Every structure is written in C-alpha cells, then in structure tokens.
Amino acid sequence: VKSRFISLFATISGIALSSASAVPAQAANLNTSAIGCQQDAFQGLSSPLTKRIDYSDPGVVNLATVGTGVLCPVTRSPLLATATTGSFFVDGDNYTGASTFCVMSSYDFLGNFVGSRGFATTAPRYDEFVSFPSSLLGVYNYVTLSCVLPAFNTANGFYGGKLRGVTALQP
Amino acid sequence: MKLLGAAVALAALVAATVVYFDQRRPGTSPASPSAPRTDSVASDRGESSAAQIDELRRELATMKSQAADQQSRLASATPPTPAPREPASAEEMQEQRAADLESHRVYMSEVAESFAAETIDQRWAAQASSRVNAALYDHDALRTAARDIECRAQTCRVTIDDDGSGTLTRRLPSLALSLVDVLPTISAERVDQGNGRSAMILYMSAQREAPPRPK
Image (cartoon, rainbow over all chains, first blue to last red; front, top):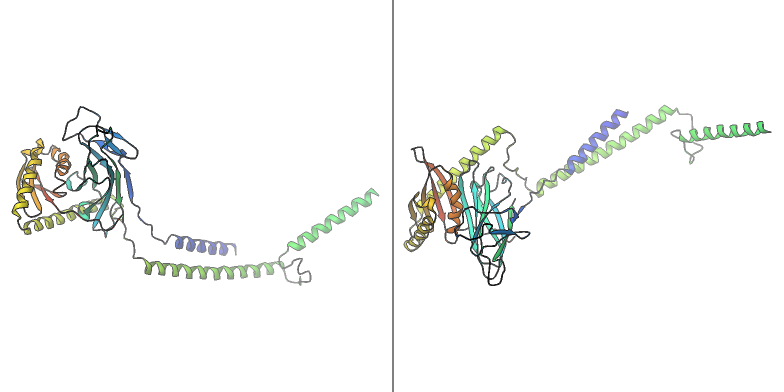
C-alpha cells in the first residue's frame, strides 16, 4: 500500500512540475554599458592627451579637444532560427549641438569582417536603431561598437557628449 | 493509607492509557462512542487506504485533465518558440559554423546581384566616389591596397587587397566611420585571388534599415 501511495504522489508531483514548466521562456534583451569601451589605438585626429577618454557612470566621455574613437564590446545571444535580422539600440547624449558617429561591425569566428552598420547623429539624446541581416550575425560572430565621441567643449568646460551603451534586442 | 493511594493512582494511570489508545484506534472517535467495534483493525486500515487511493486517483485524473487543457491553450494561444541556433556538441558546432559561412556566402551573392542590377546615377556616383577615395587616402594602410572603386545609384563597390597582416581588418571600422554619413551600410566578402593572397570586396550602401517600431 505504501509503495502505491509513493507511486501516486510521484506521478502527481511530476504532472504538477511539468505543467508549471510548460510556459516557454521569453528571451531578454541584453544591455551593455559603455563603461566597457576602450580608447581606439587608431585615432584620426591627434591630441596631446595620451588618455583621451574617461568614464562617467554609466558611459564614456571624451577629454580631448578633438574627436576621439572608442571601441566597445557588444553582448549578444544567437538569434532564433527563424530570425531574419538582428537589431540593436545605441544610446547616448550630444551636448550643445555636438555630433557622434558610430559603427557596429560584425566579424565571423575566423575574425573576418563581414559587415557594418552605422549612423551619425546630432540628437541631444539619441537612441539609434541598428539592424543587420541574420546572414551577417552568425551564431559565432562577434559584434563590436566603434564610435567617435564629440570633442571636449573648452568654451563651457564640459564634455561634448556621452555614449551610454548598447542594447541587443533578443526576439 | 499510602498503599491505597498508590493503588488508586496506578488504576487511574492504566485507565487513562486504555482510553488514550482506544481513541487513537482507526474507525473510532469520541464523536461516535457508539460506533461498532466488531471490525478488525486491519480491515479498518484497508478500507481507509482504499478510500485515500481512490481520492488520489480522482485528483490525478483532474490534474491530468488540467495539464492537457493548459497545454492545449498554450499551443493555440502562442506559436511554438523556435530554439536559438545554438549547437550542443563540437560536431554540431562545426556544422553550425559551416551553415553560417554558407548563409553569408548566399547573402553576398544576392548583394552582388543587386549591385549589378543597380542603375547609375552619375551625380551621386561622382560624389560618393570622391568621398570613398578621400576616406581611403586618409588611411595609409588602405590607400595603396584599394582598387576598382565603382559607385552606382546608392551603392559603391571597392576591392581592397589583404596582405594578411591583419591591418585591413583593424582599419575597416575606422574606414566605415569616416563614411558613415553617406554610406552607413557595409557588407563584406573575402575572396581568394588564386595567388595565395586574398582580397576584401566591400559593398557600401547609402540605405539604412528603419526601426520596426518605437523602443
């Protein structure tokens, strides 16, 4: 009798657990702060400053009086098998009419550059949409964000802008 | 006197013990003092267990029905969520990588076809070519390696020889940044030149994808 009880309880518990886990998990977007960005080794414009960037939580700013390039990691997950595109939002600020230029680049697992998508913006608070076809975002691809941050404004003693981070949309 | 007191106390203890175990016996309760006590204890326990098993069976059937109903509602309310393209083993990983490369190859052949079918807008092509040349000139490592620049109505194609040092890959994001205001979209393909060297063909487009909906 005891074994029959145990068997019945095990069956009931199993059904209860399986019905509870039947709801499919929803994928979450992945936010990456720009405090992970680093100063690009290659700069289009020279500056007397060696360390040209600083981190203003939660973002990165330019200390130089010329535009400074930064390279940022982008966290993402493999796209769903049915996805035709992979998309991102890049967030930041431009102060007093400054401009920010950004490019997101995708590299395959061999390190080959396979494509990039970019934007230029003067919006005081930008939230730029960037989208790749899924063929350029393979499961093992790496995505980076390169931006040229606006110059430090010597007139008002303030940063020209701030890059806050990037959100990978995970459908 | 002491002996009498001890006897009374012992009798009371025995009586209390008997009453206690009598009340704990299955099938009897203080609320039914007149319940028949002719059935055996084993029989009482058997009937009780059978009743509990029947009740559990009914609960099991109800839960099975509810679970089936829930699965049915989920299936009809939401489409099945496809699994991410994430392989589980080394073999599957190799297959996935091969599939990724093939997907990229197919996509680039479509981009090339689209470029070939593009009409030529002389004005746009001249302006875009000028910007591309200027951007390449600003990058020492790319200046002499770039060739065959061709712009049409909204896309430019450039071939850049790769010396295998890694410089080309490192400089491409910088090149893309310098052209982002006119050619924000780049798709690239590495091609074998047949002499042990490779080149990168870039298709740079003025088109940008629009956001599907507000964030």
